[in-house]
Image (cartoon, rainbow, N blue to C red):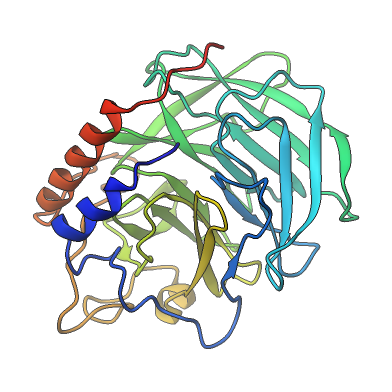
Length: 344
């Protein structure tokens, strides 16, 4: 999804000193490093997934209006080292997310809905991660997806790295949801995703490589939740995500030591943020005041996440009032210049 430059102004005015502030972007001392996507064809990078067989390579894709393409970008140089063309599928409508499953296959979420939740189905595409990095055409499987409680706009798709189950986080200015797919996707029937938790406004998400944590990001926040019994637990831990005016993507580095935050735009920057060692070791959030960006002068969490496992009791903290105002202003600006919806 394209955002107006006005969002940067609104966020900096409405959310000074927030977790998405422009100042003090953390730089990891070790592990994965940030990079700039240099390919002029990638103007709307809307998802990221770290390769497991090609060290330092990240898979990405454009938002809508590009085609059935997925790009492999070398983080050492920022250059595209492969463009994969998907065959055997229909015309992509609004591709928003990408994730790598434990089966070694890449899952591409054509799950955006420019009609704000009126398409009665969306799609997921799946193909094996190429062993050789070169431009190629591959045959992909196409899965039809519906939500049990009706159509939804969504931008986040996450494949659990242990179970292989696919999850989608819907995007709503009121209250989004986390949706769980069937144990195995079917290419011949409709895959019904059921709501298992409430979420704040989410633009992307990613599981840690060991599957014990789920990190979600929005325009103005990022949080990491313990993943237990197939659900995110509690309010999670705030992550010092960088301010990115078109904050659209997040993934873990292959070794799980770093979170990589990306955005749309030409020559967009992917920013590396180290994972909190305490949370990484325990699979649970650190105690208050011990996480990244905690302590004097830090900002309280902008939004709370899901409630206790299995209850879906998402709620907003007091700080979310400010977030809600900022989001409302952004939405108002976007709706004034919303691009014309594409037909299915």
